[in-house]
Length: 84
Image (tube, rainbow, N blue to C red; front, top):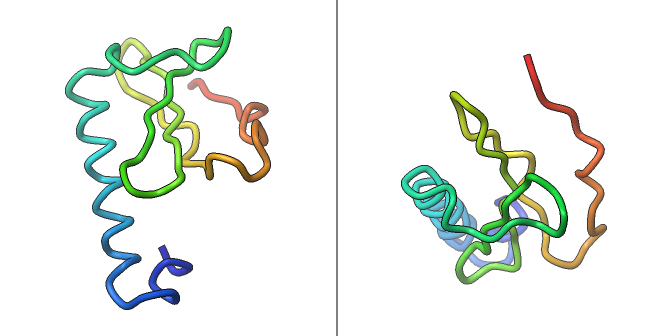
């Protein structure tokens, strides 16, 4: 968000709003978005910005693993763990 805000006043807020829209869309229909390769993760492309939201639909929650740039350091987040 800070990066985009430094490029143009208000752009960081627009980025945040798009990420929030993505999260709302994921919450409303989590199974609608495509699986990521051969994993249990799903991915959502953020509108207007080159970011993807990777998430898991767990029994009681939707766990967002990362909001990652679409081409920088691909897959860096895969080693993250989840659980109770």
